[in-house]
Image (cartoon, rainbow, N blue to C red; front, side, top):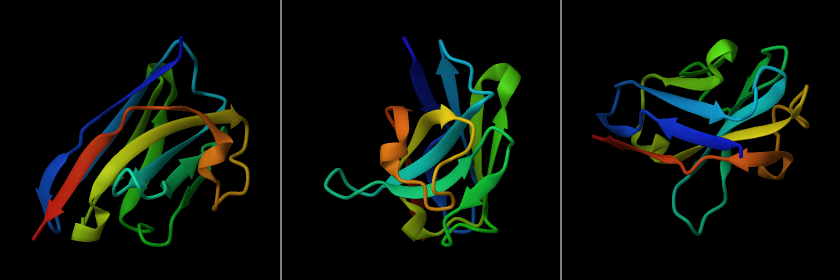
Length: 128
Protein backbone atom coordinates (compact mmCIF):
# COMPACT_ATOMS: atom_id res chain seq x y z
CA UNK A 1 0.00 0.00 0.00
CA UNK A 2 1.05 3.61 -0.47
CA UNK A 3 3.34 4.94 2.23
CA UNK A 4 4.95 8.34 2.69
CA UNK A 5 7.94 8.56 4.98
CA UNK A 6 9.46 11.87 5.96
CA UNK A 7 12.99 12.39 7.21
CA UNK A 8 15.37 15.23 7.93
CA UNK A 9 13.64 17.01 10.78
CA UNK A 10 15.51 18.12 13.87
CA UNK A 11 16.57 21.05 15.96
CA UNK A 12 18.42 23.99 14.50
CA UNK A 13 19.37 27.45 15.61
CA UNK A 14 17.54 30.39 14.08
CA UNK A 15 19.13 31.33 10.78
CA UNK A 16 20.13 27.76 10.08
CA UNK A 17 19.00 25.32 7.44
CA UNK A 18 17.36 21.92 7.20
CA UNK A 19 16.44 19.65 4.33
CA UNK A 20 13.37 17.48 4.59
CA UNK A 21 12.77 14.48 2.38
CA UNK A 22 9.69 12.38 1.77
CA UNK A 23 9.99 9.00 0.14
CA UNK A 24 6.87 7.50 -1.38
CA UNK A 25 6.51 3.77 -1.81
CA UNK A 26 4.12 1.79 -3.97
CA UNK A 27 3.13 4.78 -6.10
CA UNK A 28 4.96 6.91 -8.63
CA UNK A 29 4.96 10.58 -7.71
CA UNK A 30 6.00 11.89 -11.09
CA UNK A 31 2.52 12.87 -12.30
CA UNK A 32 0.99 13.99 -9.03
CA UNK A 33 0.52 17.11 -7.00
CA UNK A 34 2.54 16.97 -3.80
CA UNK A 35 2.90 19.26 -0.86
CA UNK A 36 4.35 20.01 2.54
CA UNK A 37 2.20 21.12 5.43
CA UNK A 38 3.05 22.21 8.94
CA UNK A 39 1.17 21.67 12.16
CA UNK A 40 2.24 23.34 15.37
CA UNK A 41 0.14 21.23 17.73
CA UNK A 42 -2.28 18.39 17.15
CA UNK A 43 -5.17 20.73 17.96
CA UNK A 44 -4.26 23.21 15.28
CA UNK A 45 -4.99 22.95 11.59
CA UNK A 46 -2.52 21.95 8.97
CA UNK A 47 -0.91 24.98 7.39
CA UNK A 48 0.20 24.78 3.78
CA UNK A 49 3.91 25.37 3.30
CA UNK A 50 4.50 24.54 -0.36
CA UNK A 51 3.19 22.52 -3.26
CA UNK A 52 4.57 21.24 -6.53
CA UNK A 53 2.57 19.85 -9.41
CA UNK A 54 3.13 17.45 -12.25
CA UNK A 55 4.83 20.13 -14.33
CA UNK A 56 7.09 20.98 -11.38
CA UNK A 57 5.40 24.31 -10.86
CA UNK A 58 5.84 25.27 -7.24
CA UNK A 59 3.81 27.47 -4.93
CA UNK A 60 4.67 28.72 -1.46
CA UNK A 61 2.98 30.17 1.55
CA UNK A 62 3.86 33.83 1.91
CA UNK A 63 5.67 33.24 5.17
CA UNK A 64 8.24 30.93 3.56
CA UNK A 65 8.64 32.39 0.08
CA UNK A 66 12.27 33.04 -0.71
CA UNK A 67 13.49 30.85 2.14
CA UNK A 68 12.12 27.41 1.29
CA UNK A 69 12.45 25.42 -1.91
CA UNK A 70 10.28 22.45 -2.79
CA UNK A 71 11.46 20.06 -5.47
CA UNK A 72 10.89 16.51 -6.52
CA UNK A 73 13.20 13.68 -7.53
CA UNK A 74 10.86 11.62 -9.64
CA UNK A 75 13.16 8.63 -10.32
CA UNK A 76 13.59 8.23 -6.57
CA UNK A 77 9.92 8.99 -5.79
CA UNK A 78 11.11 11.56 -3.30
CA UNK A 79 9.82 15.00 -2.47
CA UNK A 80 12.22 17.46 -0.86
CA UNK A 81 11.95 20.70 1.05
CA UNK A 82 15.03 22.79 1.58
CA UNK A 83 14.57 25.31 4.36
CA UNK A 84 16.94 28.21 4.87
CA UNK A 85 17.10 31.15 7.25
CA UNK A 86 14.85 29.30 9.65
CA UNK A 87 12.90 31.21 12.26
CA UNK A 88 11.40 30.04 15.56
CA UNK A 89 7.93 30.41 14.05
CA UNK A 90 8.86 27.77 11.47
CA UNK A 91 8.81 25.18 14.23
CA UNK A 92 6.25 22.41 14.07
CA UNK A 93 5.67 18.99 12.62
CA UNK A 94 6.07 18.91 8.85
CA UNK A 95 3.93 16.53 6.86
CA UNK A 96 4.37 15.35 3.31
CA UNK A 97 1.21 14.89 1.27
CA UNK A 98 0.38 13.24 -2.04
CA UNK A 99 -2.55 14.40 -4.11
CA UNK A 100 -4.22 14.13 -7.45
CA UNK A 101 -2.71 13.63 -10.85
CA UNK A 102 -1.71 16.85 -12.54
CA UNK A 103 -2.13 20.30 -11.02
CA UNK A 104 -2.48 21.19 -7.37
CA UNK A 105 -6.06 22.45 -7.10
CA UNK A 106 -6.45 25.98 -5.86
CA UNK A 107 -2.71 26.66 -5.87
CA UNK A 108 -1.19 28.58 -4.20
CA UNK A 109 -3.85 27.95 -1.56
CA UNK A 110 -4.35 24.23 -2.01
CA UNK A 111 -6.24 22.85 0.95
CA UNK A 112 -5.23 19.86 3.01
CA UNK A 113 -8.42 18.15 1.86
CA UNK A 114 -7.05 17.96 -1.66
CA UNK A 115 -4.43 15.44 -0.62
CA UNK A 116 -5.14 11.75 -0.36
CA UNK A 117 -2.05 10.33 1.27
CA UNK A 118 -0.05 11.65 4.20
CA UNK A 119 3.16 10.84 5.99
CA UNK A 120 3.59 10.54 9.73
CA UNK A 121 5.38 13.86 10.01
CA UNK A 122 8.84 14.96 11.01
CA UNK A 123 9.42 17.51 13.78
CA UNK A 124 11.31 20.73 13.24
CA UNK A 125 12.38 22.91 16.15
CA UNK A 126 14.05 26.26 15.59
CA UNK A 127 15.56 27.79 18.69
CA UNK A 128 17.10 31.18 19.36
